[in-house]
Amino acid sequence: MNVEDIKQLMDGFDPAALLPDLTTVAGKMELICRIAVMLGPILLLTLGLIYYFLAPKEANHRFGFRCYYGMGSVEAWRFTQKLAGLTWSALGLILSIVMLLSTLGFRKLTIVDQVWRSVKCLGWEVGLTLAAVLFIHIMAAICFDKDGMRRPNAPKFDLNFNFPFKK
Image (cartoon, rainbow, N blue to C red; front, side, top):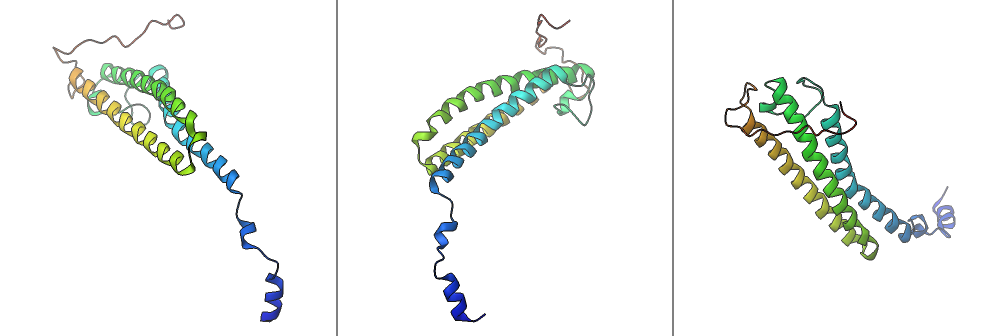
């Protein structure tokens, strides 16, 4: 093949035809931003419910919310799991509602503004999740010592709600 054959072959070729249509890219970008923003709160809500209802009865190193003061005894472990479940479930529910309301206005925004709003939402999600983790660690440290014994002046919290379907 010589150069003339290549020129003749490429004569009717338009490289712009290989690019996707911008309207489909914009629609997919909106969907990607919505999924990215909603995934965190739904995951928090799910993990919170799992920690509250399905946490292991004894401390282990595989599943559960592990912290230094929550691993000392069975009582400390169960308290930490219930507190983590309640905290993460509440945060997941609140963030789900707030982020859903935040993503409703995505269609009115440009693609760049959608991405920046998604980044801001993800930043809030990460910050609030870290604050929740810190809260759980602090509460476990307030209520229990390093051996898992309840501190004498520690406040008592009843984290077991009496649901009709629980025995």
